[in-house]
Image (cartoon, rainbow over all chains, first blue to last red; front, top):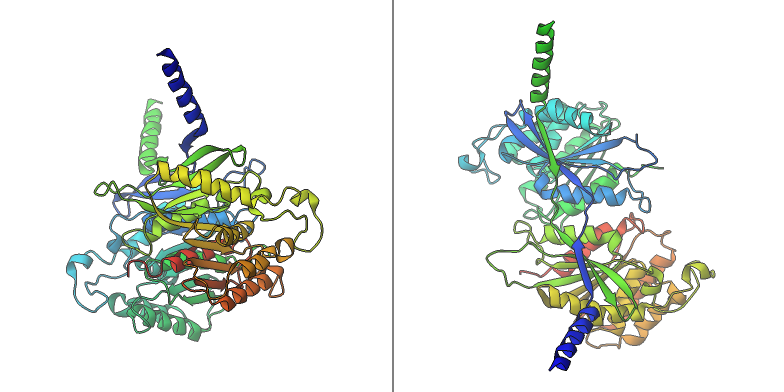
Length: 283
Length: 283
């Protein structure tokens, strides 16, 4: 009977060897979750920070920073884009730090005015009763978040502010009310319908014809109900308002993604926005 | 003097409290590195495997699989796209397993014939002397990799094969020589110039006019030296060859990204390819 036992052992050995296989964890380029207490907002806030891989031959190198809203939707995507597009064999943009701001109360933080009217023009107080906190949110970014990032990471002054939907109107609101806070703004499908087109009116009011606005600006919409949708009509109005202002040194582009939905659009729009902002980089 | 000491301590306490800040590691959705020994290739191979998050209410759910070449370039990108596009609030494609195949000898594995001629038509034996191993590489995938993945992960039969550049000609070569191995093929900027347009000749030879090829096929090129480049002319020839064959049940699309480079193009092309392959999904 011993012979069978040995044959079994031999068989197992051969079988295991034939399938020799080893599994370990895949190592993503690391990112950090930083929790800070905001006095402005009177709450703790989480931000996700992704830094370029350290180059041992240039330890003092500093990097521009991309500040991104709705971090739980798009932080990994933007971190991936920045890492890939700045690779030495791609070289389409500089290495950047990506700071993703996670939401606590999204509607409160990312709406510029208090309004309970939804995009259909109907009241919806349960969704929107806490709206209108964008001013405080921008104060948090200016007074607390940016100083914390500048203190703890190797930043250079160039900064981008990026958002989608309510995050899109926050990016535009920031450009109009705090034009010195960022160098470039990305507004993917901004909810221009908000509060009876508040942002469109503010755009017309704040941007003086022929004035200087030394910024880069990307805005876009997808197919959010066809060409008669509130989104598409709002973006067309924004685009014509900006064109009519004949601003000096504003480098802007409008993209309409007619085959993308409100939620698939950010994937291609954020890529195009980075390509647009850095189109002359390295030239 | 004690009063100064106490004031210093008090100051430090207040300063620390004001900046109260906590940092931890960001947790990416986990992926695995699996090392298997390939008898076909007579070497160990690493593959990166990313699985959808387990749904506790549907533990037996099985998933289609995307097999990707050049994993060190594009695995994280594809894993990110698949995770995001299959989210319940995006729902543009099914959850999928992504298997990225890391290279050992890229030129050997991803070229269909032995040739030392570079894309300028000049001999380059140092770069290409080991070329022509694509047949063995496809055998490795069919006989060893796919069975290992099917054995260890919750796969369903639907499979996509995706590659860029030499990976693009490998995807096309696979479709032509082993049409049953995959259900859909993605060829981003395939190097159709390889070996005096070997793949274009093979396409014309293997695809019989009016025959049935029940597949989805995406191919593209960027701006790789303008409209007279070998890449662009090759893709136009491929596109007209396929059109002339009037194949039944082949759903294909050609995209030309005139503002993208050979290395930026995959970011948008892989997104568009997934959108194309799953355009009717869920409808």
